[in-house]
Amino acid sequence: MKKALITGVAGQDGAYLAQLLLSKGYEVTGTIRRNSLDELERLRRLGIAERVQVVCAELTDANNITRLIRDGRYDEIYNLAAQSFVGSSWDQPIYTSDVNAIGVVRLLDAIRTFSPEARFYQASTSEMFGRVRETPQNEMTAFYPRSPYGVAKAYGHYITMNYRESFGMHASSGILFNHESPLRGPEFVTRKITLGLARIAAGEDHVIELGNLDAERDWGFAGDYVEGMWRMLQQDQADDYVLATGVTTSIRDFVGFAAAALGLSLDWQGKGDKETATDTATGRRIVEVNPAFFRPAEVDQLIGDASKARKVLGWCPMVEVAELAGMMARADYEDATGEQARNGVPAAVALRDLSDQPRHLS
Ligand code: NDP
Ligand code: GDR
Image (cartoon, rainbow, N blue to C red; front, side):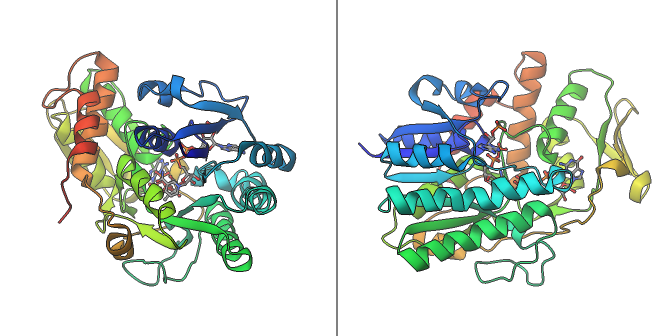
């Protein structure tokens, strides 16, 4: 039986990856932080909380990382732990760098010393591309990060490459574009939108305040992306891969897709920070722009080219963005009302069905 370690197992990707590895017969150990509030909630929602061995670890603490790697004897180590919210990285740039940059070399150096045969996955990100100068972005596209988060992740990416080249370690980075799910943290824009729309569809008088509606992201389903992480570590040679859908969508259009899935139709009016959306059925304002959510430096548009992953890994995303928005909105509506969503199957069933279906994006 293979042994895997997932740092940040209580996060969105950690939960889906743990589910995938358990289904493949792995023994899964995952790290959480001792002070996390309800750290196992996502694992519980996937019904796997009892099957993951949980240990406490903090990426800023070199000694606990050393002990974790020295005592564990893992075949595969997936580094998903991070201060993952771009917006907070301007408020906590030093902490973000400590976790997302130096945390990676703490892990790599412990692996090099105590477990050099282990295979390592680093959670790199499309945020490293930042102000893009080439569309779509692939593994060769130059980085121009636009946030302390992106800068720190670029260090994590390069140090992973450097340990691979310097010490022959099996260390790979997945440059993943945005991926979402009903388990997405509520601070990220997609989940903020679906949580807000679910409250509105359930009859609440609620206004969703958003920042830049023009930003465009390449959104996929997290369940598909963890499959790509696993495939990277099954290759004979370690390497770097982009995972993306190749389709980009504005925040405004994501709102429209999620609203449509809940039977809401929107009327957009105004421009810039005066832009609003009203529910055509009730005339109520349900979206407005709040400049407090604008970022000091924005990543305007991301579109990934995952042809290398398609070719080498045989990886292919299976959920397109309107379906993803609907899946998330229906799950949140069910949570808000305890009812089945108006025009969809129950969200828990939808999740299973979607990850099982061999459908491809055109
Ligand atoms: P989440 O924020 O859902 O999960 C991150 C996890 O890391 C949380 O469980 C968090 O614990 C843990 N963590 C945070 N800080 C530390 C620390 N100092 N020491 C140990 N653990 C810590 O993120 P996702 O699951 O969405 O993302 C997984 C990884 O992939 C992250 O590295 C992210 O940056 C990267 N990524 C994500 C993408 C996406 O679209 N989802 C795209 C590209 C990259 P706690 O619950 O206690 O805060
Ligand atoms: P991102 O995701 O920064 O791409 O990072 P997020 O959902 O936070 O922002 C996406 C875009 O939406 C715009 N936006 C808003 N964002 C938030 N959070 N809240 C708002 O109200 C809002 N209004 C507009 C943002 O300005 C931005 O342009 C995610 C994280 O998962 C990272 O860890 C990961 O590396 C990248 O995706 C790929």
